[in-house]
Amino acid sequence: MHLKSMKKKIAQIMFQGEIHASPNPFSTLLYLLSLLYRGFVRQRICLYRCGVFKSRKLPCTVISVGNITVGGVGKTPVVIYIVELLKDLGYNVAVLSRGYKGKSYKRGGIVSDGRNVFMNSSVAGDEPYLMAQRLKDVAVLVGKNRFKMGCEAIRRFHTQILVMDDGFQHMQLDRDIDLLLLDSTKPFGNGYCIPRGPLREPLAGIKRASAIVLTRHKSTVCQAGTDFKKEVSDEKTPVFRCKHIPTRISVAGSRRSLAVTSLKGQKLFAFSGISRNDSFRKTVTDLGGTIEGYVDFFDHHPYSPEDLLLIWKQASKFNVDNVVTTEKDYVRIRTGLPKTPPLLILEVSISFGSDNDVFERYITNRISKGQPR
Image (cartoon, rainbow, N blue to C red):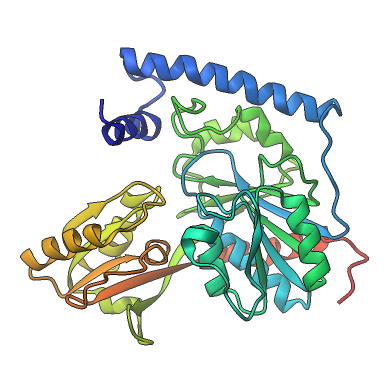
């Protein structure tokens, strides 16, 4: 089987296969592999609990933002939200990320000092580069050894609070607040661990969370239903709700920006390479845009000039007004961007709605009392 088709088949089983779906030989193989993975992860967690493996403590406050499943739950906009909140409160904040799929993952490095961005997305990784672009006066660092890079942030930038992106399973570094993000529409996927399902660890790991944030929440009732309530049975664990809000549209190759309402009535060709391509498609149509054609890629897809040529060739056939993509996809486009039709970049932020004040109070109350302003 071709590697690309193999990845696609695994992804279909992981993200679309239901827990009671009829088994087939391939899904059975993935299930057996998931049992091995589950056992390995449980053993690792046990070794940390027993003190065989030690978590290292940094001399500053550490806030971890993570998830229990692979795939996007909205970590990046939540990290940006928390960083801007803390910055407004007067704290010196830095972001610490592993730099997934970036060339600096192993050796580590400084993506941004808050004024200048030193790496592109291929070196830093998609999310760190995006955060470096969005966050002003905030250092962004990447590296596999996050204790080492945390020490570097404190030494170079006098950091008081480190916000660790994608840190729930990174038990090597101690944290003061452990935020677990769950997609409220389907928080545990099909209930299986990798590679049969999207779970990074058994659901018992939820108990490590200081608080839970339900993303993509659209009602006062959690769409996750009774399964969620059963797994999160500790009534002492706070649960907050937030949703993705489209905030702005940028025009590629210019400094122009448009209101999100400008998509209404437009004929569009869309493309994306994120973990929730269906979510992006729905966002565009909810804003009133008509998607005449769509090309989806795997998450973190590095766009080549050939990819872009194919996209724009298809877009031209539909005679669309614009091509549209996500902000995360745009940071992976470095060369060969056609000029017509124009490319629009949809930017999103997080809103906690009615939970906003209580979430902000929770964060500020949990921060170490001795933090200087």
